[in-house]
Image 1 (cartoon, rainbow, N blue to C red):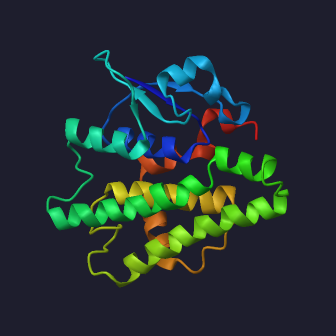
Image 2 (spheres, rainbow, N blue to C red):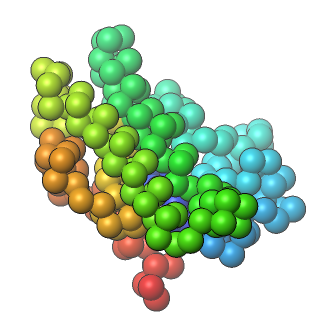
Length: 217
């Protein structure tokens, strides 16, 4: 397996955590998003969308793309430890929580959106940063609304076992705390789950700011 990603990428974080939990050790290839390497001809052959992550399997087939699709593939091909509940309703809830973070919140703050805001919309740094913080927190506040009131919430997002929801919620929280300097006081349940997860080696070790490439920042 070969995982194309970037140390700062929160979507790559999703896959890195899941692979660590499932004891899968891919070769990692860094695609420097800050230098625009995702737009090179070579990488576009791997992922025509020009984003990370992408996962090349050993079977010689086309690469997998989009972090949630990759997580689902890993769950189906290496189901232990399970990252989805056994019951259909529970799986739907976990997927819904994951999607708030990964499909609603995260896409609004990625490099291509930030670049468009700056170059095409002529937004200065302060305005751009307000955008990033606003949409990051709207996603976390929506998640908080579920976690705080629903009885299915336990030690983690769904009961007392880790799920895909925890991976995505932790990733979104990392963005809020480490990248966009958000005040997370309004999402105490999210923060409780985040702190629980960060006690687990797979979550803590995969933190973007703990990756080797970030050491010079």
